[in-house]
Length: 38
Length: 242
Image (tube, rainbow over all chains, first blue to last red; front, side, top):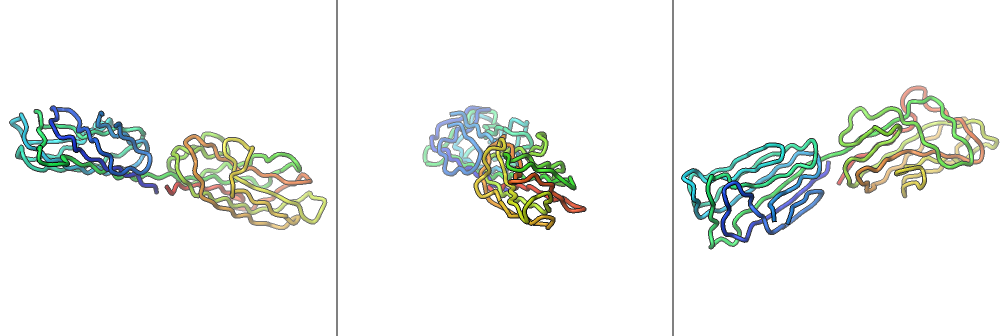
């Protein structure tokens, strides 16, 4: 068994349009084969 | 910045999130949804426009990669509060595994003396296996990069040698029978017609697409190896641990 972890935060505030994704800007922790597009 | 998270390996993923909102332009409940390229839409809602809402979801990935976003599912623009330094958070916990093995089926095997290692026939695959490939004969192909525990075992007897004993070696080879993996080769002076056991283990980092084989060699004479009457004489097992 192998584990993968990712923790992200949003600190840029502002607005988010309907249907748009939350643009997490702060990666706090990442372990394993998982990607975020910065 | 796209907000896209890519799950690169098959497995089970638990995703938890929270967000604070100040207002929205919609007349509906405030909502976010976990949306995946598999078609998952897992919503978390709040009946009011200002406050904190949270949600979670489980994404089951059988064929990677899969992408995930946390999306505004409110039907209008959401305003984040200006007095909250952090407006949203997300945590992904993924659980994946890979293991498998091969075993010999032959009762005898001829190994030429004083030549480069030859491939050990491993015709039988492990009863259960996950995320390894057996399309290359006698080999295990790694599908997920990571650190694996490797176990090799051998029980057999040799005959045909001119001296009372002769060195016989078995080792793990990656992508061709050129160089054995460090710590995964064992050489024993085998006494003719006496069953001998080899056991060697190690933890090794493998990359996706690595092809693993067992190579055997002996010197100076050609030998015939006799394996157990029933059960496998040689096994190669791999199990991802990290």
